[in-house]
Image (cartoon, rainbow, N blue to C red; front, side, top):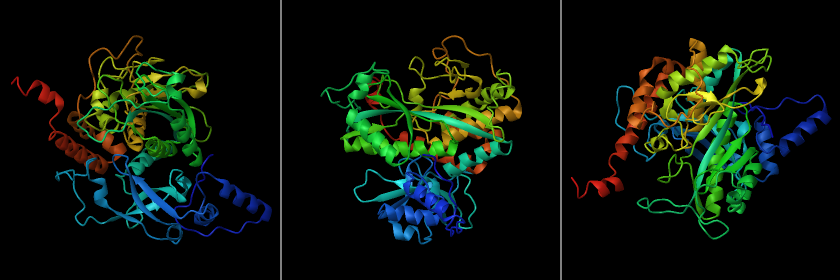
Length: 484
């Protein structure tokens, strides 16, 4: 169900001129699975469902839900919600990196305010007590948007399109693995047992039997999603053992990023209910395919609704080719926003069903940028580089931002690739530190993403790399212990 657009702050609803129409609107609000228009509707929505607690959540740089929980009565009484600014300066392991010239801590660690987006209000279906959740934007105490927070980074990119009279449209595809519970990180992960009592093997791409192994879990994913007003387009079994993929319907980038944010949480909770883990690591199992978050992208004219990637006669437009040219030029420099961890670069290797360069082609899954077969109205470009461990807000912001830079700067792409493209030389950063340096290297990316965001993000990623370097791997013990 399409979500309603919400007022940013509590406001009294204007009296309706038509009582019958007002009653119909009120009933529609109460029946809405996701989103209300204002605080008055929010109070009614919570009351009719007997909601006791509200989770006010927002994604940190890693895409991890952070926030506060409160009684519903407090939520609707204009309570001020705040988080410390340091929340956006710690690593995935909870460490705080050293300051640099571009990575700085706020001297007072002062508050950032949570501003609920009521269009995201929904129930939390896995909780035993009646609980609701709402995604929040982050603003300063003066009410101004904080530019380096993930949702605001994406909003800024969408705004740049809007200034040109355009609206980007996206459709993410999210791959993930189901794995047996593992409480010791020294031991490798392995697939869980399905309903047959046996662990599923690889080579199950598009297998219905592979999906049926986890029927009850998948039923819960659908049930939880429906209760939250989240729409799944299709679900398939991928190549890896117990590797699944969920495809979402195309739509507004912010709404779709919100959905990916919520889907990750939903899938993890459904898996835990069945005694297994769901992981969005890019490469959780050695020798198996990695998990991607492919992003289908197009751009429409706001006034006419026309896909600007197609000319009136149905042929591909110059904006279509320049969008591809922009991705080819800038995405290697922004790759760390789509491949954010050391583990992410283990996925981007030859002969493992992942792109290793910036080639593009028509219906060519070995390229980084694939143009699916479609009619002119649905012409789009699929970015196959992002991994499923990426923060969806940042991956979308980077992908759309790079395409926009191509249009703004009139960048033509290379010729389309007709042959296999993922078996040759790797044309992308080979590791986290190289990718971080590339992000900082181009002023054009700072213009689109904000220099403040890039400085903070780069500092956090360098901190995560230093933490990783403190860990001695099994490979080192295997080959160095007695040989060097």
